[in-house]
Length: 290
Image (cartoon, rainbow, N blue to C red; front, side):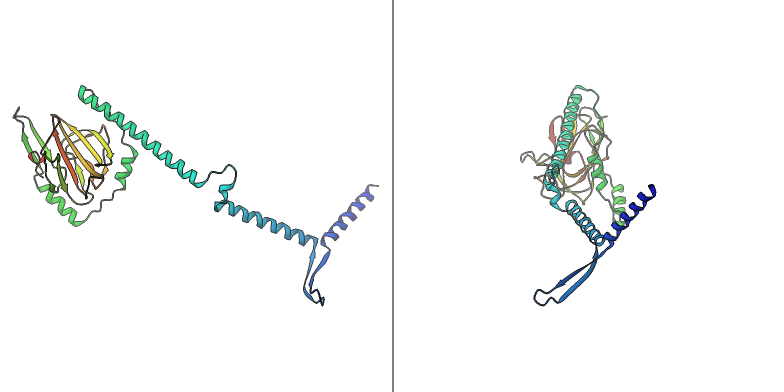
């Protein structure tokens, strides 16, 4: 009985394979003369394989179209490229506003600490300043080396004797080695001097002190201000890059910025330098040998 069932199953399987592998002739002929134009022998297995191949090709092409064309934006749950761009822009703006608010808070607190004589807050330098400084490329050349030797031989500082105490001497360093194009004029409300120098020239601090301003404004561009001893305050405007942030302590001649042309009031690459004493602007040429 069992052997009979096995034989019957084998016959059914053989019959199935015969049907699948049985050849059929597919003929294309003319309607009027019945002339044979094309003839192809096909089996059911060939037809099934061809259909599976066509379906696979269709799915493959559809996947490519959805992945690499704008059609993917029409898939439910997928956001459009415009929405993604707006989200990225909003994220950048919110991050920038957060950093600005933090810097303003540190700036105001440091102003209060300076007035009250308390210790200044020293925040870590932001990644923005590090990236900007790292992006600047200073190419060395023979002319630069000769210029450096010539500058080092010059006396770049001047000694100012205070009237109140003749033993109190202050050495001011020149912020850059440049040419004065616009002088100090209190009547015209030009409370500083404009200095022109080579592109990518590094600006130095005229005295040691603490950075209390390191920000950007639409009129003066990148600005950095340093509070010095004896109620002196120096201000450097229109920079291209700021190398120090609020709360940093700098020594005299330390590099704090790079000359630039930022801000609406700037007409070309230069440094606008101001020196204030006890809240009043003074002529920098009376204190510094440029």
